[in-house]
Length: 275
Image (cartoon, helix red, strand yellow):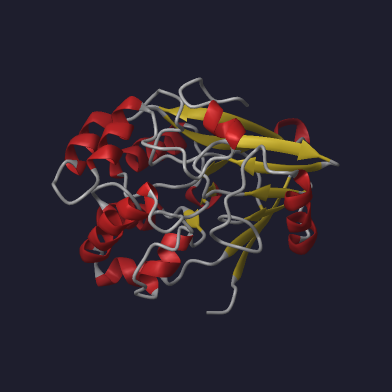
């Protein structure tokens, strides 16, 4: 499939950024309510991909995003699902706990998605581009070069910097790593709004998103917490088909393991998010 970029043109007023819904219908419902309360139009709500994932309601989640009218790029999970691939494409180390868990939740998601949802996933672009408060912004999943690349705050700027040149962007909005962060250097900003489908390994069940604001014609961003009915999400995941470890994470806010994390982020487990 050719790389596809959707250009939204110039956006104004508040813009909602989020990622990693991971089949968590309750979190997406709560986020949609936030957007409506803040009077953020659906076309100003943008997802960094991985709509489908670890939780129990993949089809319902895709259908709600479609009904809402929010924009999204394709994460690695969407790419794999629409190509009927055998694995999630998350780039987990073979034989790792995350890899073993994916052999449960990915086939589950495959079995639950309707043809209508799969057709919707096929419409998602690889990138979204837009202008906001005189900034050129590109939305990617992992990185501009690799949908499955894990980029964290501690990742060297030398690895981030080429993305801005390739995308001709002042701001890169990215997902995939599961943790919210921002990293600014040389008038460039790497912004990960976090994910709404799983907590951020900080010991709290709330999840994360971000809001852009162009008040006073300036570029502003704010990381936000989202509370939702996580107890229901966890209960629905206890169906004998999904990893019990992930259903516990939904409640405890602590990841089962830190295999994908660099040392700095791994050391912050349970200590809160450093923004």
